[in-house]
Image (cartoon, rainbow, N blue to C red; front, side):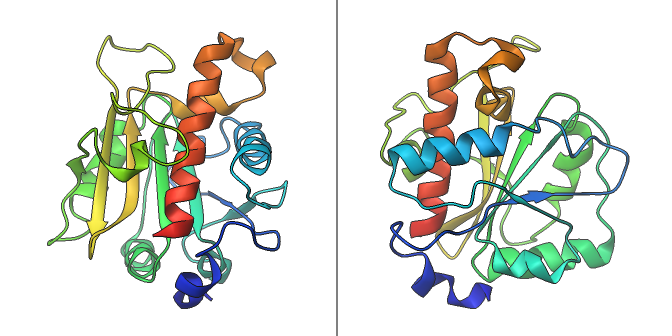
Length: 211
């Protein structure tokens, strides 16, 4: 269970663990970027010493399997709806040591940001400084979050909710980070751009498993 994460995930060289993909209500395409997590998992296993299961687990916030996952990813282009019960379950998950990465695939922001702003009264959603540890794991990003795809000519933003000194939730905006994780045939990004996306994703997993 999640309360054992401090013991279970202190060392990345473990028996195979699973990552999660969050399914949510509201009509948004939570299933966007279907090759992203498998590609990121392969990169992490090859480059940072993880032993992650090749297939991510799809969960919703009311699924008890949520509490067996150290790291969960959420993306999409549209509407997001969390019931009060789902918001409370997310609070429990994050307080217990879980990590949620939300990547706006373009169009999610007006729906997800208000939810995040009111999730914790004492832990607001704040932009992370470029010297935050997520930018300095195996791979160094001294300029902060990389820009993968262009949308509105805005700089990429990494915003987070920090609980007891630990980043528990990361919201990436104007980056399209998970697009860069996809199979290279999907978006045909330049290799150097895709590599930055995968390296940043690996940093997120490494941080979540060690803090």
